[in-house]
Amino acid sequence: MRIDRVDTDQLARTWQEAFADYVVDMSSMTDERIRIRSAKNAVDLDVSPGALDGPLMVGFTLVGVDDCMGEPAAFDAATGIVPAARGAGLAGRMLEWTRPKLRSLGVSRFYLEVIQDNEPAVRAYHKAGFEITRELRCFQVPTVPLRECEGDGPLPLRPTDRTAVARFAAEADWVPSWENSFAAISRIEDRLLVLGAFDGEACVGEAVYSPYFNWVMSLVVARPHRRRGIGAALLRELARRAPDEVANIKVLNVDAGDVATLRLLVAAGAVPYVDQYEMALAL
Image: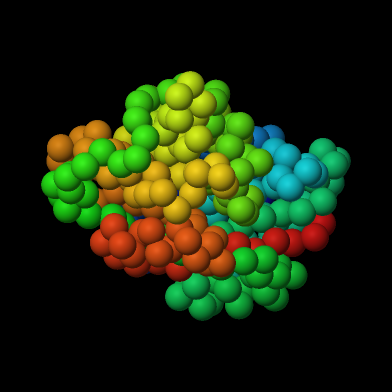
């Protein structure tokens, strides 16, 4: 098998075969969804390897490149290997293919996310030199109970522009995961629902929901305005404005140390979905 630049013409087919037995249902990832998610995650095809067995692609890694925590970084947006090609060290070979290309771009750290229960993958990443940087919690929040809640919260809520969301980076208690970064919000090709909580003319809280992927990408309240029920009100309003057929909205990659947000989600009836590790490799 040879490693080369990822073949986008074969990507969707290989994706479906590689993730058919994955713990999370990935069957909805069409060509278009892969493209939109790749744009959101700043995937650079020039540094994204594919494994080819003859003419067929049997594995791939989509690699995003962007600034993270003040330095150039990379992110494994997806690694998939079809069952017949597993156990041959392809993930490691693809990593070695992309490593010098990332160094040439000034990238010094390579991030990924892995489901904690996927013990073989966690062991393999540890063996490759990745270290756990933090734990991330993922939830599904039932929409019906939130839609039926009475009351509008302490402040007026109304749609706002996604460009206003970046101002809340300084108000966040932790750096969002790559998938939910403020840069990802600015890049995603989606008609995002962006809600602001307004104290007069000042936006003091924000929530961002992607209808296309059905997940909450951001929920931040300015520090002086916390403990007033603004976050809960924003979450309720997202549920009310979500498509009628949506029974649960996903809230993904909450830092496990964010006790306040975890309490908010539990109070809203959130059900644990999966837990992840964020891991990083020094290049």
